[in-house]
Length: 304
Ligand code: GLU
Image (cartoon, rainbow, N blue to C red; front, side):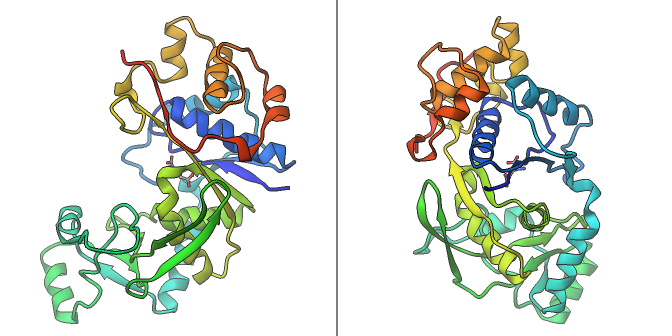
């Protein structure tokens, strides 16, 4: 039995890629007899829209998903993240970082042997002297707080679909310059606090997971198991987005398709239904076999 979760950010209605990941996360959890939890990752106040909390839950319900307990909002759990950060500060594992995103991109070196996660940090501010820090503060920069990882640290984990995965763990941001706890910290704290035993999510996060394993270990938290599922891409090869056409349940409804039609489409894309076949959630549950899931992305066939 492995409790699972789906953790969307309420920044828009769910699209077929989000819905497919949610459906798979539900199937993994329910087929093991575990609970299925929903968590709103809404720490980024600038991009969250109030109407999308309920809108996204409506999307999940319409597809046939149910969940256990109250939906958790990260914005209401700041004190947990602050406590976790304080613990890492006490362990002397953090330092302030004044870099802008642009400076990080410019400094990041591609010449590295091990796979690097997205946005990997080259360590520019790790060894700043006190006077260099003062100069940056005086210039009005508000520092992020980073975790100090050993240079070149490589962490491995075993993924249900990808097998053993190893990646460099860089100095991840724990708290952003505006004071907001960072995703890479909050996700670890919450998965442990909520008792999530298996994290099922898109495989764009595959190389970030060693960071999460590392942060969890430093905090003395139980490390969950992981299954990273393939993404849905547009025909241009980019991660599915609004611009790829009719991608939300609302868009599909405008074309005369019901949520049941969308469930069939998604089920077909993961090999659990034949094209056009109507399938209930209980049928999907009965057919579900993690080992038979596709490993490659699903290219969403239409534009416009
Ligand atoms: N909030 C993240 C997203 O929407 C989810 C990441 C995760 O599942 O860990 O991409």
